[in-house]
Length: 276
Image (cartoon, rainbow, N blue to C red; front, top):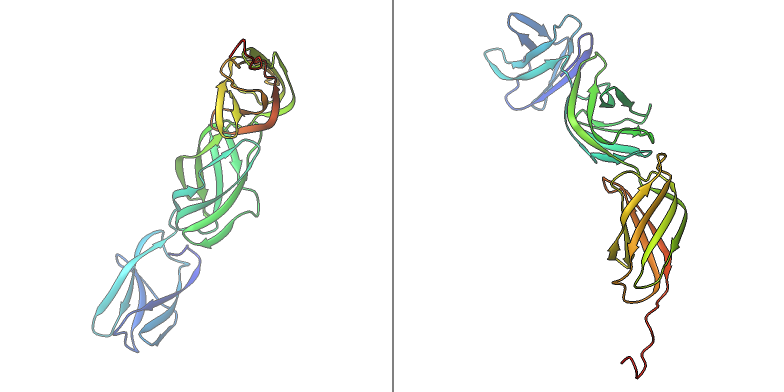
C-alpha cells in the first residue's frame, strides 16, 4: 500500500520474471508505470510515483513481454484497520501501555474515547513494530470514567478506525491512611473504621488468613467524599486470635491488601477440667 504524493519502492519476488518485465499499477484505464526497474534472481525492483494516483484499490502487476503473470491488490490512501489490543484493560490513575494490532498503521495517532471524554496517547510513546502492530501508552487520570472505552486510530491523512468498547477502564484501588477497630475479639461483631480515599459503592472487605477468606464485611457506610469507611466484621466463626490481613476491593477488581493489619484477641476460655 501507499499514500498519494509518495514515492514507494516495490519488490516482487517469484519465478519466470524476465529481464524486460515491467512493474505497474492499474485501476480501470489508469496505469502507473514504474520509474525504473531492476530484475535480479527472480525478483523485480521498481519505484512508483503516486503523486497523481487516486485513492482506492489498485492492482499491482508484473508484466512479461508476452503476458501479465502476476497481480495483487495495492491500496492507495487506505484507512487504518484496528482489530485488537493487548492488554485491553487498565485502571484509573495508571499508565496503560498496550499493543495495537491491525493493518495499514502509517503515521498513526491513537486515542481512547468515552462519550465526551478523550484520552490521547502520550506524545512520543508510540513504537511501530510493523505496519500491523503499534505499541502506545495512555495516561489515565483519577477521574477517568470507569467502563468500556472506544479505541480510535487515525493516520496522517485523517482516515480512522474505531474498536468499539475496546478497552475496560476499572475503578482505581482503595487507598488507606488510617485503620482502627472496635471489639476485635473472637466471637464478637467488630466495627472497623478506615480513613483514606476511593471507597466506591460496591466495595468489598474480607478478613483473610494466608489466602483463606475467613469472613466478609457487612453494613458498609461511607461519606460523600468516599474518604471515610465503616463496616462490620463478624468474628463469631473465628477459631483463634492473632494477626489477620484485610483486603479491600473495588468493583472491577482493583484491591489493596493490608497485611497483618488487624490484631484479634482470642477470648476463648482456656481448657480446664471443668469445661473439657
